[in-house]
Image: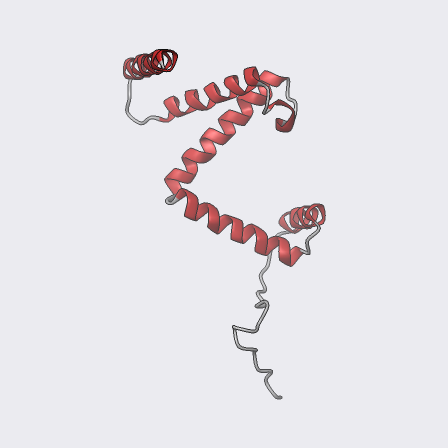
Length: 141
């Protein structure tokens, strides 16, 4: 049997990569690929590339966890404030956005390790003072 030679990497468009997956993941990949107008292979490549770009953007796993915490809290508070409308419907509503933002802030305060409620209250007072100073400076300008 003659073994087929691979093209040099410089002219090869794609490499073949075979892997196994559970039915549920395959079905999800098929749905997402169809919705995006991609093949399953293209969808897998797209999602893996996106995953690596997230790794680059967030750095270590702890930072990814904080980003996910903020995003989930923001979306949850926004959905609750809007009566569970899709994000695209409430993201430009200033009142709902403000509530979503505070949902993310509350989640961050709750995630601070080894801190008391009193320490959090002091941080909030400091933030309030800085914000009021910024407002006063902008009005004076």
